[in-house]
Image (cartoon, rainbow, N blue to C red; front, side, top):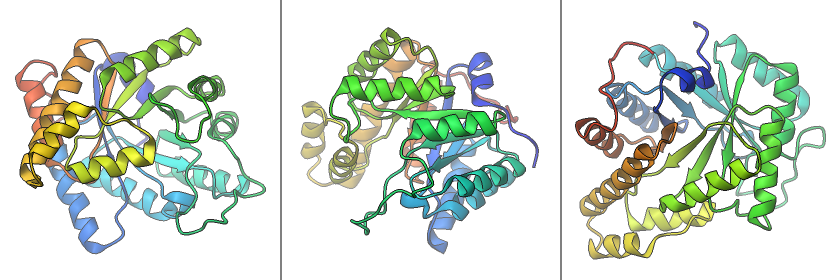
Length: 304
């Protein structure tokens, strides 16, 4: 595998970036869905794609396997996620060696969540409790990697206050993170207020907004419940008016995401990261509209 290009280098020369997040499949049908989605996404020529890492490290092998697949079949720049909550330092070091051997240049460094089916779960005694510790470890032992970290425009659900959450984020950047990708949000002012707060703290790295186009009201409530994001009353009202029509709900989601991304791009964000849940229709439609309206340049299918 050829060595990849760091995302921070791409940000310097190729703004605004576009990227998409996959999760590793558990079944053959899920694998087929990833391939189908990747084929559709390829037409938009993203700057990179990411591949998630399961709670407690449960998808470690599949994360790397699907990362390789996305690179080899579609020539994507791939950023695997890495969480620390379920691993010892030696295991983390071994995983990082494997990631480097496979040619990946970028890592999304996260604390991660414990397995949902294990209420008595505890982090590894010889591991890391926080993402900042993981970032510091990678930066010291593997300076080759470009590191992304997560930010929460509406506060991490576990954080006691926004100020404390921002302090933790600032520490992750101080330890060596190169850029921030945000959790999903549906009110752009939450992003811009978050960005202002980060700059006021001296955080100068790029902050890439994360967007999840709504597929249904049920999905919206579920995901916002997980991450603590607010549902704008206007969006909820629109989705309720669809009366459970899935096609209509998806179209409402596309329109809302288009309005979000349009404003974000017009106000100069460094890029947009799409959470796609291994589905392509909404984001392909979004990219087409953004290119049509001159908000994104038509992207050549040559590898960046």
